[in-house]
Image (cartoon, rainbow, N blue to C red; front, side, top):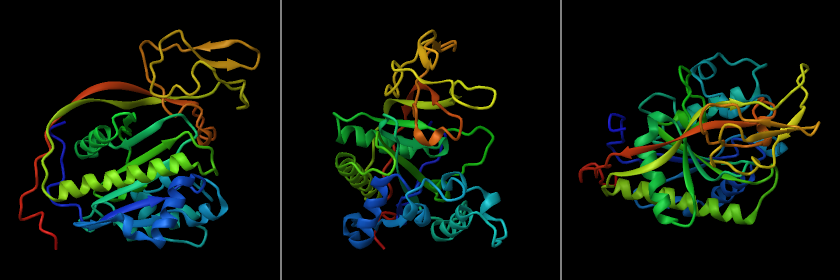
Length: 319
């Protein structure tokens, strides 16, 4: 972990995005509120900019219009020549890249916090790319210390050999805050309030970093993606069963070889045939049916996180 880069300058340009998926309601309504009353996002050393990422899908209360926006921030899409027949989300990704990037340049925003809901029982889940781990691991640890009774897990999503494609990949650093369970198109007051508090804590952490606070080394468990498991299906792709009751709602809990994962419509159990314990995540997520994913497999690993040294006094001066 110590070989990975960490920010050495204050994070001045911060964005909070919601509505990347147009039916995940906590982020949508928080962004709408902050667009009218942005003072809540103000900190002494920076002011976070609220952005409604996918206005068309939000208006239609759909995950997306033509394609998943959160899979569209690749250089191929971002650098393509615009045509009238482009999918809406390709056009919108290019607009967001101009607003918050351009991706991979010094002009890009320092940090993007992207807000999501899931129908799965993940609780508080931070999703981070491996290249962003040092800063984000400290951020996750800070949230754990601020909320000792609230499990807060970091899910490290590595795409081996593939370019990153999420909204936060446009910025120099960033993270996704995933909160569930919440049905699509539904706003729950408890999760809305919880997300609002967590966003405030994340911005507080950035402020402490900007002001030069040093954060000590520590150890923590993280979850790293291994792959995905599809539902049992017929040759035509129709479901022949669904997630087993013993697995449902047990995100981030150990799944052992031989334990049931699916209940077939015929009544039979399908058992997990892996060779070792894994930790399922996003179990029975509604949006993943179209992606042929019943759940993601992850491994739980213990990591030693090096100290995050304080910035020098010259770099922390407010411009």
